[in-house]
Image (cartoon, rainbow, N blue to C red; front, top):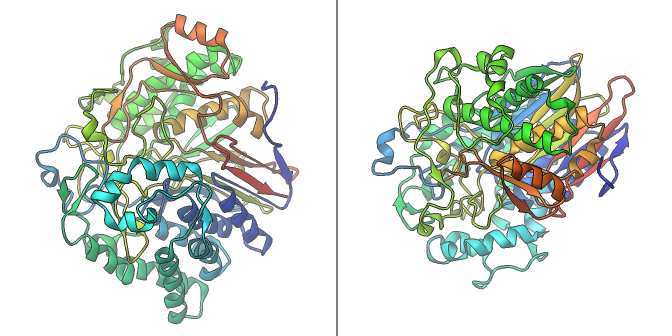
Length: 592
């Protein structure tokens, strides 16, 4: 068990909100206090995160949401926009990888529509109440975290030389703003305000107003501003000019949508994830291997535990790379990948020593295909100038995402991982106050890849919220930012809750680790065979044993890995709990 907790596990019976930013958690709690339910609180929290964590998500990005309404069934809401109709392989002629910045990799923005669909169908509060907190922070200002300032500093040259609209918003007098200074985004405030006012003029009903705001987003002034901005070629972060593939039909035709989760039983619980258009099923594959390997019998802070979890991750993520894709276009052998028999077949590949290979299986006789992979550090420095969110420049992976979890007294439960539309990856649309997303960078150009680029396809993202039920009742919601690390950190967290006797906060505070021996989902798509990153709080004796087993151990700062948050509910007593990550001094939970 950890020696201490950085903060208490919150307990109560009214409502709980946990997120990656204290202002967003405060907004969510305020919505609950005013009579809103978990869905209202989640939407308001999500819109606020778009303002206060602009380096990690924005209105031009996307969000997968997993939720369960009291008395209902677990459901996925897909807020992941698709690639444009013009996104054929020929549109990227002459490239070996889709760039990670600019406007060429832009998908249809999905987050705005998804939050409003959730609020329309399951919430109770009017549109104005959901957007007013975000409007207030954008108009009056919010304190810039050091992480935002660091990101602006990293791409200052790009702003100054290539993206003047971003420089106008983020560089004051050509200077990087100070940490903790209050930043305002009047254009974004006006965008949200106009959406509210125009929608209110259209109809008196709450649901119709929300639908009108969704229509305006995809067909009205928002769509017009997006299309006007990308009508001419725009440089990416390296200075290469490209014309966006996104057009008016792409924006007008897309809607967020509901679908069933992918689910798996483990240790008396059922874990629910998105389909293979996200990486969520890789969490479930790791659970199957944990069961087959007896991982739950190991001390959850030991070298044995870290070794077993890491080696299972390598096998599962190799399958992710070989087979995961949008199931609307690709035959993903998911039932077999998640079967006990497949796990038993794969488990003997985990030996006493660390593997240095990438070893996908052959489920249902599918022939695995892996695109050409680059070792970490082999990409030319000039190719890394474009503000990709998780480029490893200093030996550690940066977060690129937000997360939130909400539960109310009735048991309504929401877990969501907003991302995309990063301030550093695409230029700001000046009339709107936000950039487009660049999620298309996650496709491969080789047509043999399961995740090959194509019109109307959802990219295979790393975004992966988690909902846990017991006897059909929601008992926990959890998640973290972190790109390819999300389903490693979340899996470790879950196993520590189930097998380690830890409460929500203890498991978050425990020393974290992850493998870099998986292909990065982000440009330039590098990987580091055998590399295992551990927080320095992992004891020297544990690190020595891991090295003896062949792991290439990289020691990170003591509080540097993972940004987990979680909420839970005991269906028998109604007791609610919440916890949040202390790393980065930014995430907080609120509740009573």
